[in-house]
Image 1 (tube, one colour):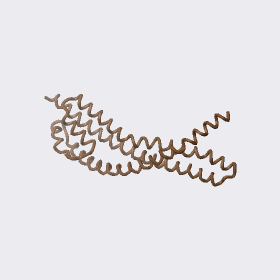
Image 2 (tube, rainbow, N blue to C red):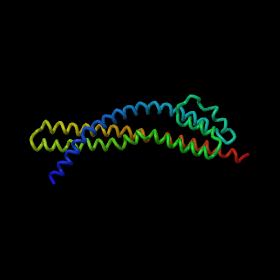
Image 3 (cartoon, helix red, strand yellow):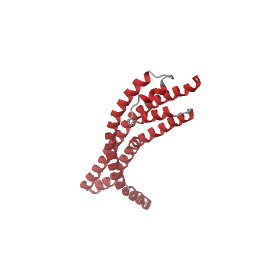
Image 4 (tube, rainbow, N blue to C red):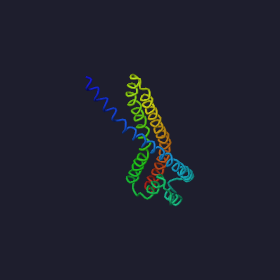
Length: 199
C-alpha cells in the first residue's frame, strides 16, 4: 500500500512543473486576450451602430441595396458575412453561411472558454500539489520549506483565477455580441428569402 501511495505522490509532484508552465502560458494568453478584446470592442461598437441604422429601415424591397451602405474595409465578422449573405443566390447557401458564422463565432470564443475552464483546474492543481511537501515540512519542523510550498500554492491559485476571470468576462460579452450579430444576419436572410416569393 505504501508503494502505491509513493507512486501517486511522485506522479502528483512531477505534475507541478507542467502545471506552473501552463499557468504562466495562460496568464500571458489572458493578457493578450484583454488587448485584442479592447480592439474588438471598439470595432464592434462602430459596426453595431452602423448596422442598427441600416437595418431599422430595411425591408424586402430595399434589402438588395444594403451592400452599398456597408463599409468596404471593415474586418468585422458580421460585415463580412453580411456581404457574403447578400451575394448568395439561394436559400440553402444563405443557411450554410449562417451556420458558418456560428462556427467562426465559436472559434473566436474558444480561447475565452479554455481560460474560463482550465484556469481554475490548473490553479487548484497548483494549490494542492505543494500542500503535500508543505505538510511534510511542517511535520519535520522545516518552516522554510513549508513557507515556500505555501507561497507556490497561493500564487498558482491567484494566477489560475485571474486567467479564468478574464476568460469568463470576455466570453460573456462576446456571446452577447455574436447573438446580436446572428439575429441581424438571420433578419437579412429572411428578407432575401422573401424576394423570390414576390416575383
